[in-house]
Image 1: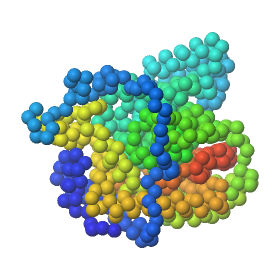
Image 2 (image 1 turned 90 degrees about the vertical axis):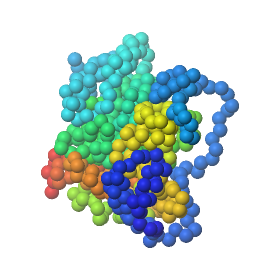
Image 3 (image 1 turned 180 degrees about the vertical axis):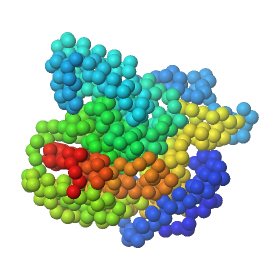
Image 4 (image 1 turned 60 degrees about the horizontal axis):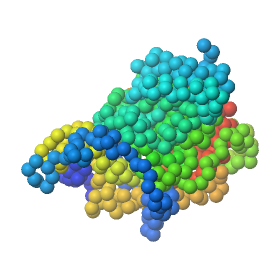
Length: 100
Length: 484
């Protein structure tokens, strides 16, 4: 199917997934994820040429509703559950390397 | 105080008639929870005040001559990945600890509107990822039949709550077997409905093309009643099927005379414990004695279900769980920049198995590997759908074990994730196809622990599936019947 999963692959994926892994985590995940991917190699024996993919069990089409105003969730209630709020908006630390 | 019946149907009838109050029923169940949940740990939260208020409202309706509904006064436990307005909903994860959802899930609205008393939020494998409830951030749930063993998972708390008598019915969610496998291991009934039959609005997403909410109960009829209550179109879930809800109770006693029921040969051999396989054969004999025609059927692609599932489900999960970024809800670990805050929050908030699946899914979707993993898994999914179509051309229902083994001991499979994943081998193909399936208790294994028999049906085939389940229920050997 593809080349063996490397420790570098795992480190790259952790970065993409926004997870800070320790050196020990990287070793363990490399081993455990390799075992799962090795098991998945059994599908390599299947002839999948010309088989269309199924991403969903239902034949989905766009679902539209009438364009009428309905009550949504309460803004203040939503904001009350956020870790940090300012001026009735979610507050985050600096982005794009700006000074906070 | 009069004796409290054990089933939802009997409790609701007694409450509606006024012979039993919802308050009496609730007090009795709260006392059972007090006595034993310290040991079992089925609940993350017992909603004592809310449940008392709901019971008082039901009793007031009865006193005023009104009908509170089909589940009048019936205590019901909710898996803690179902949103409850203003009541903590955690997914058994640190990352959502303390979060109070600003709305109710559609199923929560429906059970409350039918007179049920939501009694608490049940423990699960974190974000429903697991088969033993050992992955909960709040400690494992224990199997009420033997507390040295797991209850199964991920809906282990909902299964254990029913098996321990804390509530006659509960709701769980099933992505790869998370209702049926714990039902089997705890010796109760558990149902995964057709994808789209029950609204997922307010179910915290794990793998959106596979997740489905369903019932647990001690009897087949109670699951039929609860599924009738929660099923039906909901405009807030764009995958909801816009068709009338199935009528299950009225056909429950119609039997299986003339039904064609197929053994799935791929799921009866290697990897299935012999005592479990023997019970499934015994169950098929019982269906044959009741007039069904039993035959063998091959679903070859089912053997590849596990591989496809453990690429597709983590891929969807890695995308769904990207929302836990420390910005809008749940915990935040502060850091100088947003990117560092995101990573610090996710690293501290997610447990080991959730991280493993996010990693697996991110890898399967990443540039250079997408076609080899995720793309291939979606094609295997097509083969599984086609093989089921062929099987259902010749058979009305299929029968398999629910789980390859009975309940295992704590720690037996935690060091080797793949061995844990193999638990789901019989349940996963159904989710990939979007079909309904259910687990019915059918005697015990060689160790005296419950065995579950799984019945599978084509999409929207619930009514036929429940008829066969009712036959199995009446033919099931007692759990303590000596194994021979």
